[in-house]
Each structure stands twice: as C-alpha cells, then as structure tokens.
Amino acid sequence: MPKLFLKCVVCFLLIGCASKKEKFEDYVFQTKKEKNNYISYYNEVLKLWKIPFEEQNIKTSYGTAHIIMAGPKNGKKMVLLHGMDASSTMWYPNIKALTKNHQVYAIDFLMEPNKSTLTSKPLSKEEIIIWYNEIFNHYKLKNFDIVAASRGGWIATLLATQKNNSINKIVLLSPAQTFEFIDNIGKTSSALFLKIFPSMKKFGKTLETFSTHPEKISPEYKSQFYLANKYAKSNTSMLQMQPFSDEDLKSITNPVLVLIGDRDVINSEKSLERAQEFLLKSKTKIIKDAGHFLSIDQSKEVNETIISFLKQ
Image (cartoon, rainbow, N blue to C red; front, side, top):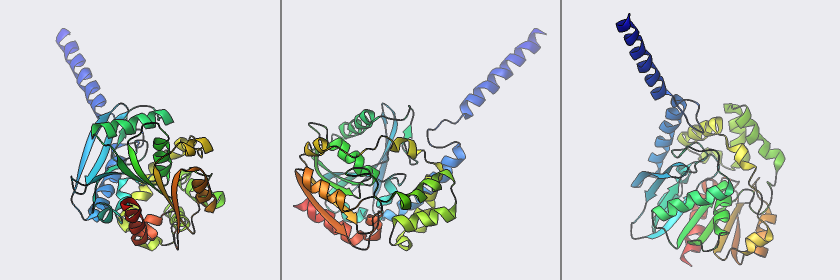
C-alpha cells in the first residue's frame, strides 16, 4: 500500500506539473494556437519589408517588448509607433524610405496583438509613458524622431507632453482622438462591430471605410490585420484616449507634422486647425485621395513628405 500510494502521489505531481507547464496565459490571445496562427501571418508580412532587419525582445516592468530594428546604425534614430491593432508590420510600404537616413526602432504596443507580451494588468496612461521610456533608456535613445500612426499618434503626443522628453521631431499620421474626438462615428462603427462580431464581410467594409485604396493592402497584411481585429481587446484601452487639452498641446515644444487624408473618417480639418493654433511648431497637410490608412493609400507622397520634414 505505501508503494502504491507513493506512485499515486508521484503521478499526481507529474500530471499537475505538466498541466501547469501547458497552461497558456496571454493578455490578448486565448490559446497558444491563436497566437501561433497570428504570428505566422505577422512573419509573412515582415517579408514585405524587403530590407535587412533585426528583431529583439527586451524585458520591461510590464512584460516583454518586441522591437524591430532596421537602417544604418550610424543613422539618426527614429521610433515608429503603429496604429491600433496594426502592429509594426504596417510600415511595409514606408520602411525602405524611412531607413534611408535613419536607424529605425519599430515598437509593438504592449496591449495589442503583436509580438510584445503584456504580463500585468492593462496599462494606465502613466504606465504607458513608463513602458516606452524603459525602451528608450534600454537603447540609449536621445534626440530621436518619432513617426506615429492613429493610436500611435495619440501615444506619441502623450510622450511629447512630458517635460524633458528625448524626442526631436514628431510626425503624426491621422492621430486618433488626439486633437478632436473621432470625426465620423457612424462610419467608424463598422470597426466596432467587426471586433464584437468578427467576419470577413464586416472586415471588407471596414477596410473600405478606412482606406481609399483597399486594393493596395497586401493579402498577407489583410490576413494579419483581420486576426488582430478578431483577437484584440483594444476597445477597453480606447476609453482613456481623450483629445489633449489646449494646455497639453501648448506644452509640446517639438516640431510636429500632422498629416490626414482628405477622406479620413477619424480626423477632419478641425484637427489641423487645433494643431496650428496650439502646437508651438506645427506643420499640417491634407493628403488627397487618402483615408485613415494614408501611409498605404498614398505611400509615395506620405514618405516624401515625412522625409522632407525631417530633413528641415
């Protein structure tokens, strides 16, 4: 009996250890299969960059940060902040141009589907600032430029409101909830319904809403972006994204370029008017025949406009 009992205890412990080992915990993904499926598409889209790059994971106070680095090591430093659920792969139409004179650090935002992994509760605004500064400090980034899209634009603005920040110039590509609330609630509701009830039909309508040229979006990226919308928990963290006050915008001393599409459903000319009125050093431009996804809709013009601004 004692031997049998001992064997049972050992088996119980082994099974218990195995189940603990197999337990999957992730803020975004429910299962390891979901994550692996998404990552496979992420890797396929990275091939569209068509330039040498390096991927790194670094430990932070809130989890693992995934960074993609590309461009000349002696080039001026640039940080890329992607749009909501878009991940760093979204820069595939822009990365070649942006890395001509810059060493780029594309950072996957911690609370979205990508290769960064959140191991804490959802981050507050203050914790978002801490998290990015940990990455900047890790790479000793000083006097660097930021190019940021949509939600990434809101984050870049948040970082720029901090005193003694290390940022040089800022480019905001249709920044969400930054200068004004979403311009066309009716049209953007398609994106909300897509997250609640994901389907390829709703996804197609969402792309048509946010892009003037959805045919330009690569099939690989469409697959990745669809899965991101399916698995994401982004809507809860959107609640803290409020337009910045006049005082906050006045506190930003960096040169800022704000670009929006002429058919943008997130921003209108009111966004540009607030940027011109309250930002100390601002330039604004409307990109014709472009929607919210202006970096894809009109990538050539957007790339040239960014590079020209950063050279000045």
